[in-house]
Length: 195
Ligand SMILES: [Zn+2]
Image (cartoon, rainbow, N blue to C red; front, side):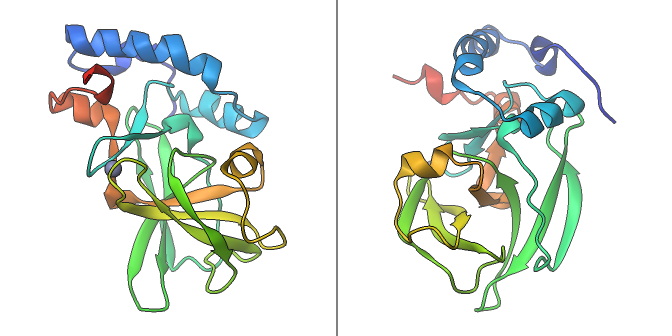
């Protein structure tokens, strides 16, 4: 189901702080976010609001927008399933297993505010043709997932070249993430209001 809604209508329990917060998001993020064509189309179809934020579950750090989610299929996934990310937006979650037998469900993002740990490793990549680095939360250092860059790139690159490329993406572990509108419904104070 795809429905278009005004961002303000996405808030189920409008409170003064939440309305202010949405205003803050609308003020700042449209200018900062410049989606690629495919991503813009996906956002259009999904009716996703820029107000949907993805947070670090451990500390609440703002990692990405819902519109940063970008499905990158892998033939090495053990399985995949669809889930909803609030207000009917569908996201595809893939299940992978590492060489130690640990399984992780991940959502892929075009970009996210994480700390990457170069040099990238070409071995045991879940996405053939891409090397990976560990991605951690810039605030609490929790391991959030992995960042992927083309294998023929240098093992160590700058964050700017990673962020600006159309050929890079991240796979973040679903249970290490939290949706901001869900956090608001729990009456948590968004990070923006903490001094
Ligand atoms: Zn964190």
